[in-house]
Image (cartoon, rainbow over all chains, first blue to last red; front, side, top):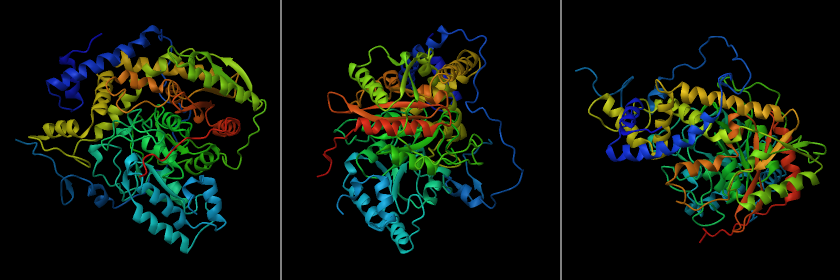
Amino acid sequence: MSIDLKTIKHISKLSRISVDEKKAEKLAGDLNSIFDFIEKLNELKTDNVQPLTSVAETTLKLRSDEVKSKNLRDQVIKNSPKENEDYFVVPKVIE
Amino acid sequence: MSDITKQSLSELVENIKSKKLSSSDVTKAFVERSEKSKELNTYITEDYANALNKAKKFDEKPNLDLKLPGIPMAVKDLFCTRDLRTTAGSKILNNFVPTYESTVTQNIWNEGAILMGKLNCDEFAMGSSNETSFFGNVQNPIDKNLVPGGSSGGSSSAVAAQLTPITIGTDTGGSIRQPASFTGTVGLKPTYGSCSRYGIVAFASSLDQAGPMAQNVRDCALLQEVISTYDEKDSTSIDFKRNEYSKELTKDIKGKKIGIPKEYRVDGMPKEIEDLWKKGIEYAKDCGAEIIDISLPHTNYALPTYYIVAPAEASSNLARYDGVKYGFRAEGENLIDMYEKTRSEGFGAEVQRRIMIGTYVLSSGYYDAYYLKAQKVRKLIKNDFDEAYKKVDAILTPSTPSSAFKIGEKTNDPVSMYLNDIFTVPVNLAGLPGISIPAGHDAKGYPLGLQIIGKAFDEQNILNIAYAMEEKINFKNNITDWWIK
């Protein structure tokens, strides 16, 4: 299996990380060597194995649906790179 | 007392409780030594002035019933600390100041400890040498230009160099045990669900666990006792009966059955590691343990499984860094362009690589072939341990396939870097507790560690085995303070 530049561009779009040609080539090399290593899993037959989704064999605890923290607006906004009063600010999205 | 920083945590606690030392004496000593040790680059953020003030306040009205009375402590920069910058070793969180505290660190402050600063680590805990940190390499106090391991490399270096009496790290695939092994210190990865993940910057949520990193097993047990609590803020926190690990610590391990997995004898493993393991087996026998050969047949598949599961979870967890709500933002022509530039400039190369792997294995058409396959193999790996634990109480292995390597030696080959975690990764995949203790030196004089793996929730047992073996091994770290002028 081989990951080509077209696939790298596709993944980069999905993961919202911009890559130029040079970076894409480097990534393709790295990812191919990593996937060569990962392909080892295909040696195993797993048709009848149940996937493990959680190591902890417990069920989620229920809790009452009540508000425990209030008035966090200032805290929530505090670390935003750009804000305007009560809002996060992003580049214009409507033409 | 000029030798304050040479004392173990347990000694310092004792000396503060008996009023031979004040919190200010101790805090001053560690701050001074930390200031003289900048060359190690262990700290990302220092908080010395606040620490000294808090120590002074503690001394005015000391509560000596606490478990960590007035003890100064620096912690890995992956734990959110209220009002003190938390970066996760990344440019993208360079300016992030949490408005809340992680449960694990809150537990530590509740017992009287004082925060000295935040310790360097690989970016988002992705690395085995601390070389992926945005804030630069960390030096291993054992030797110049030697990596301290990773991802908790600042933590391991700081404990070994005695810049903090003890610390905490996080371990997703070996990030506590491998650096402990590289620096001649003790590191415990607890059972998944033992320590709350609330307020820890997430890497791979089904694998991440916080744990203590210490100079000796007794100190490690004491800190584990403090940090392990059930927490309703973490839906994967488990409500089980926790021991008083330090009080119940015993060297009596007579009759304990310790398994030796034949699959851990990997190709190309240096003879020094093989010899260390054999020596460890002899020590365990000397302590009265019974040695039993076991098989963990899917060991070789653990790393490939890990390198699907961990990046998949990471790609999902790291989707939150979009330059909108917090952290670094790059300017873009429009919203999408802003996202893409922010993430491209804000994340380092290794983090981007793992996000890409994770995105790929979760993408349409590949999910079954990779992610689902990995989850099935993960089940087989866990089954191996379940089978083994029908016969034995614990498992003894080397911690790492080699001693610490030089800075820059493995940075160009991701797969060779990943192989560092070959003995530690299966433990995370199965959610088990594992402890690394220093057990000897290689020909270069660098420390080597042994790992003891336990049953889920059986931290007390592996701490006891480690405690008994520690006495027999009688390891001495050879640190010359070469970085202090």
